[in-house]
Structures are given as C-alpha cells and as structure tokens.
Amino acid sequence: MVRVVFDSSFLMAVVEHPTTWFEDITDLAGAIRPVVLECTVEELKRIAQKQLKKSRTAALALELARDFKVENSGSGRVDDEIVSYALAKHCAVATIDRGLVRTLRARRVRVLGLRGGRVAEL
Image (tube, rainbow, N blue to C red):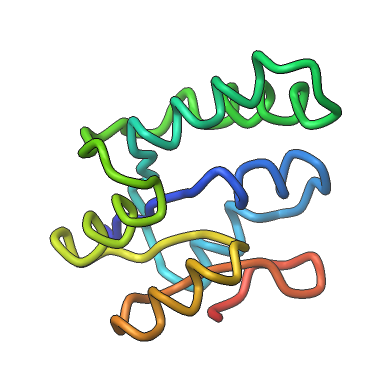
C-alpha cells in the first residue's frame, strides 16, 4: 500500500473542480493510504475561518480529508514539512503547487497532480 500525502492545494482543487481523483490515483499507484499532515489541516482551518471566497472551499477540503490518516508534523513551513515527511516515509505527494512540485521532483519524490482534469504523474 502506497502512502500519498495530500497538500491543501490539491484538496481544494478537487473540491472546486470535482473529478475522479481517487480512482485516478489508485489507477496510477494501486492501493493507497491517504495521509494529511497536521500542518496542512491547520492551514485549511485558517483559510476556512477567513471571510474569503476560498473559505468554503477550504472547509469542504477539510471534510474531504476527514477520513485520511492525520500525521504529526513539525513547526516549519507546510511545504517543507511535506517534503520532509515524503522523504522520511518514502511516499508520494498529491499537489498542484508548482513550487512544491519542483522541490519534490528535484528530491526524486513521486508527485501526483492534476492535468486536464485528471490525476497524472508530474
């Protein structure tokens, strides 16, 4: 079973533009164990509490991640914590954040993202 760490950008994107994201990921990676880091949950909570257009999207993303395994994270930047966790646990990352994608690819971490409304390896 492959662990896949989800970041807030990916979760919010699949809420805003519903896709067959889960089936797409399992087609690419086989059986997965969806993981979200505590810092990502906190980030989504902060966005959800603000009176912004994305607040409702963040709240729905939190609901989506409710059944994911929540893992501890450090107190660093969210992206740094995701990279550290992925390297330590040898898992894939689902994100659409271009900067995070570049960092992960440079570190040879498997990256899953959205391309044409479907999940693809980036």
